Image (cartoon, rainbow, N blue to C red; front, side, top):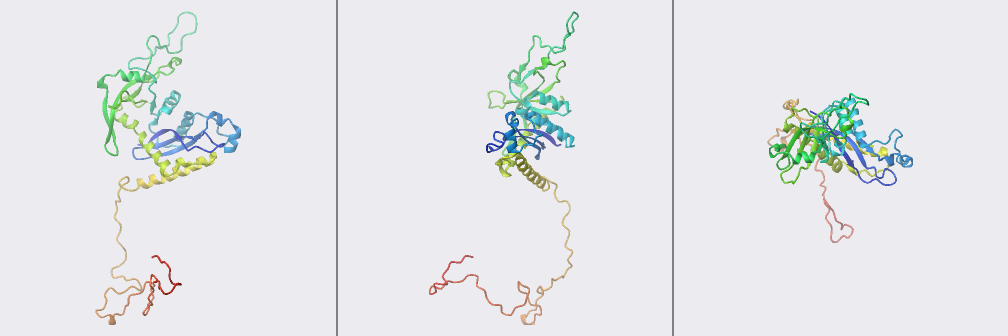
Length: 367
């Protein structure tokens, strides 16, 4: 199954001033599975002060249609464009650079797409079994309440929730084979409700999975994710999808180091995107070639057909394989490499020997 992945900002090389300086960050969207990934959208991010500077825009030849957008807004446009183009849909994976944006997560869910989003340790959630109070109706004068009420109970950070979990909540789960051994770590998960500014909402947010990673050798949990995968999703399946990000990170490293994606030193908007397009196209070709060969691709099912040359066929000018016992009686002489019969061809020495008595003929020769 092919999955979408929203990669965090890619840091390109420092671009020369005054064109595109301080703007070496791109937002990209990749299609990925366990075997490979490929960027399908790639756009340079311009900070607001850069996007509103007409002199710099003109020098870098930034199109007039390009206006300031946050990285999350660019990413959401890329996801919508990929869906409109009919590309395979799957789980949207985001690192914390995008996952901390509640608005982006809400917009993706509104499209009917599932996501696994990295979040910070201070993200607030409602623990299992807790939620804000619904709006209360009033019998007297005044406007009725339309927003959720928090009351005495307050949301807590995901770190606080993780540190309060019992020991039996943590399980060691293996998700894939690494270069030397299988990769595994300790995880816990709980059904929670995101609480970011829900006091401004009139309806409860849906429950989501909170996935927490706490390796054995660490003093506290190291990573947190929110996911809208169904409640019946198996624990190891949730971890496997979450850890699929390694594929994109690895492929981006190869794109930058082997194909030059990180080596752009130009000064213009068009050149930046042309460079990235050529690098991604080259990488797509390599992925296609890898997939066509075993063990990635299927083995050749049909053996090569036998040669149609009949038995006993002899090319014109070739020596007769059934030579006569006596060379003088052989009618078919072996041809020379130039396919012309020569009588006593002159010998051509490969190297000339230097005559110590002849200064003109003394020189070094290489073979």
